[in-house]
Length: 250
Length: 250
DNA sequence: AACCGTCGTTAACATAGGTTAAACCAGGAC
DNA sequence: GTCCTGGTTTAACCTATGTTAACGACGGTT
Image (cartoon, rainbow over all chains, first blue to last red; front, side):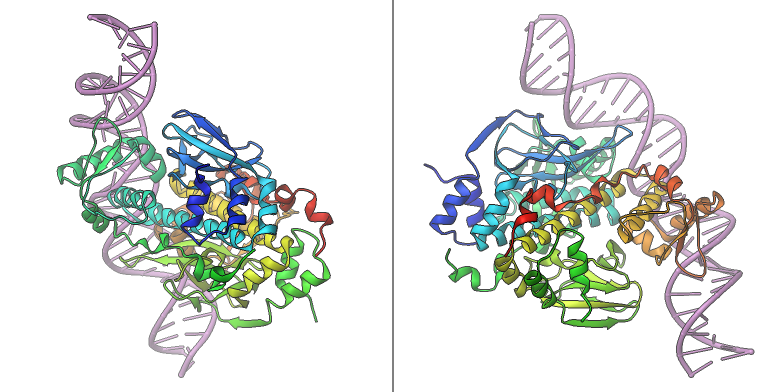
């Protein structure tokens, strides 16, 4: 039995005991394939399950009355999705696949059980919620106070950081499966203006777009443009639990 | 001993047992006065405490490199503030008083203890995090996809809802202690453009501004302009816990 | 090969909202 | 009373970004 995607993700926060690993494993019994562009759920649906994203990319969004939409967040493998709806009777945002992928569903009701059985896991879920908020806040700053060029650069750099927290080779080309119109919908811009920005960035050799998606060529330059400060992605469960997290056993 | 502000707030989610009330009471031993415009903490500070807002209004914000700032959220009495920094080694946003007020601080380290001792309180804290996210998302939609007029209307209506979840007399004038430049900083607009919008709204008799702050005259009309849908503020812990929350005892 | 849909590209034109700056007003400090 | 400060108001002007529309390139389907 290979270790599942939640477990791997959670281990990046703190060492997981065997019993806790079993508890987590019970949360991801149902890996399921989803095709590119398929909807996992829609806003307004009754939120029965949370998901962890095992493979592929997804994004959450809100459709507006006037036909436009706001992309709220992009998810990469390992992310836990849907905690946001924890306390709501209907989903506040939709979820759609950006690429083909695999999701593991687990019922919301299980979460309370998990809280009861493991203080560490409870803290990790809380940490994830805290991180999600930090990302939303940064997106808010991006939307409210930066120019289109900065917005695009910031969004791209953030996404790279989220794919791989330890960006080892900073100037190696990195591929992201994002379309320009997705980026536009995420940043509150029009697709054509995003394209204008992309032309600029291409001329400067900072990005390229092969057959599909975006290729980042000069991460460091993009960081400068975005004035990117990764603090908001550097969550750390020990900051919350103190050393307790290390010694505690179930 | 009067019952504290956290307890009152938490009781709006679920019935609280005596022992849980005592636990909560131990979290708010330190009411402290803060003057209007004083800083409670700054971004980058080490986050030692959470706060509950007992009296007065506050707001969280991020200062940008170029001197501008983004207001992230406005807090009204009863709100729990700072959970966002739960897992971070430095605060991701600053907190400043909008009016004179009283805050109760409790140390972050206590939260893990609370989780351990009461599943219900753990769930309530999780619910609060979930609600905070829903609010941020709505603000994101607001910033990304609505016109200035809609933004302002939406922000005002949301704020009214947060002051009093049961807006009983929909067309009774309601006073909010917000300045136009705060609203501008919250919505990613310039202060002068917010003023332009206010002139319009005043001409239409929807708002007025007495000596200070904003007075809402026609909440229903404002809701229409904003296409306001309060679903995102209607969190409900029983949706999360099922009926368990009602029967459980410590 | 021909077709189709999605995405990217470009250009011409329109406008919402930014910027600057100056005047104004009310309340607090002295 | 006078000064000061923070907030509001107004006007003139400017630009970043939206809109519309048309075309091209590519990958998948028949």
